[in-house]
Amino acid sequence: MTNSSDIESSIKQYILSEFLPGEDPAQLTGSTPLISAGILDSIATLKLVAFLEESFSITMAAHETDAEHLDTIERIAKLVRAKGGSAKA
Image 1 (cartoon, one colour):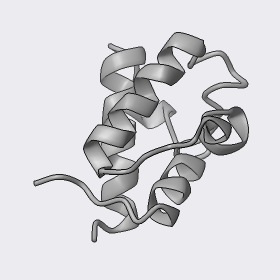
Image 2 (cartoon, rainbow, N blue to C red):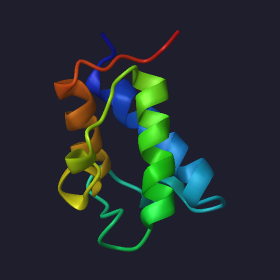
Image 3 (cartoon, rainbow, N blue to C red):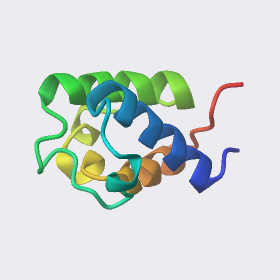
């Protein structure tokens, strides 16, 4: 099982590389709003879900792809852990 900091780190790196290239990594914290602040739009959210499913070997239901579950790195990591996700080797 992957620990919480590994999950959050992996998610943060993906968001920085895909949606915030060139931004200061220190500005993206575990509690930075992603959807409600406009960092993730609907297409970006779909890309994030695909990344999560592939990277952590989980399947997300449609109702889990909203701001309630995906608005911060902390919430995303909590969802991944709840689904028993682990990083692929």
